[in-house]
Length: 106
Length: 344
Image (tube, rainbow over all chains, first blue to last red; front, side):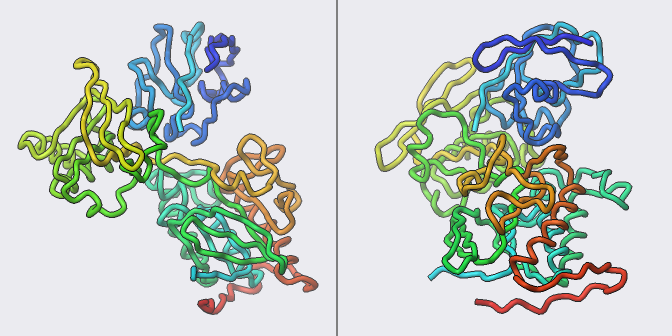
C-alpha cells in the first residue's frame, strides 16, 4: 500500500491510499475516491480529462507516443504535465507521489 | 421544407452497440435509422482508435476496432438501416400521435415510436482553447472546422495546433489565404512526417509564418468580426497579430451535449436505465452502451450488445402494440432481410 497526495482544483489536499498489486492507474484511483476526474476515454490516453501536474520528483514511467500526442492537443500543459491514466501504480517507489489536477478545459 | 425520416426505431449514435441494435431489431422486423454527429459510422472505434486491437469480443481472439465496425456494417446490411451522419441530434419531443421526433442541428426531422439512445461518450465536438472571450467570435472569425476553404480566400488566417489537421490545413490554405500563420505550443509537431516537412518548407520560403513555443491567449475585434489576437511566446513575451480568421485545431472531444436536456434521468453524465430491458424513465426510450448507467455497469462493447438485444424485445411492444413476439434462434430461421425503405 502506498500513499499519494493529490491537490484538487479547489486547492484541497487529499491523501489517497493505493494498493500496488491491483493494476490501478492514477486516474482510476482518483475515480475510486470520487475525485473530479472524468476518465472519459477509459484510460487510452485519448481525452486528457485526467491531466495532472506532478509536483514531487518521483521517477515515473516514460511518456508513450499516445500520451505525448494527447498532451500536445490539451490545454494548460506544463513541463510537469502527465495523464493520470498513464501512471500505473505498480511500484512502492511511488509512495509519497504528489500531484495536482490541471484545470478542466472544454 | 426539411427532410422527414419515418422509421420504427431512431438510434442516436452509430457506434458498435448502435449498429448491433439494428441487427437485433431487424430480426424482429423493426426498421432502424441512425443519427450521428460524426461523418461516418463506428463512433469512437472509427474516429479515435480504428487500428487498436480489441481482445474481448466473444469469438474474436483479437479484432481491430475498424474491422469490427466493418463486420457489423456487413452484418446489418440485410436490414437496410438509414443513416443521418454528420448531424447532431438536438431536440427530442413527444408528438401528439405518441411518436417521438428527433430533430438534428441541420433540421432533419426523424419520427418513430421508439428511440434508442446509444450515444456512447456523447457527440464529438471540437476541443476549444480556454480563451475567455472565444465564444464572442465563434462564426465571426473563429472556426473550429474548415467547412469551405473559399471562405478564407485573400484573408488573413491564423491556425493553431500541432497535429495532422493543423498541418494539413496550413498546407492547403497557404495558397488560399493572403497571409497564413501557424501557431504551435511546442517546437516539435506530431503530425505525419511528410506534412511536417512541407510546413517547414513553406515557412522557409516565406509562404507562411510559423510561430512555435507560443499560444493564443486573447482575441479582439468588433461586435461583427474578429480583428486580431494576442499571442504569448515562451521567450519573446506577448504580442498582437492582426487576423481575419482564427482556426484552432485541437482535435475532438466527446460531450454529452443536448441528450442531457431531454428529460432523461441522468447520473454523473450517464442515462439511468432499468436493467430489465434498459428502458429509461421516458416510455419508449431506451439507452444502451457506454451512455447508460446501472448498478454493476461495465463500459464494454460486449455488454452493450446484450443491452441492445434486450431493449429490442421491449421496443417491439411499442412498434407493434398488441402483437405477440415469439423468440427464435437465427440458426433455425436464418436471416430474413427487410425491403428497401420507402423514401419520403
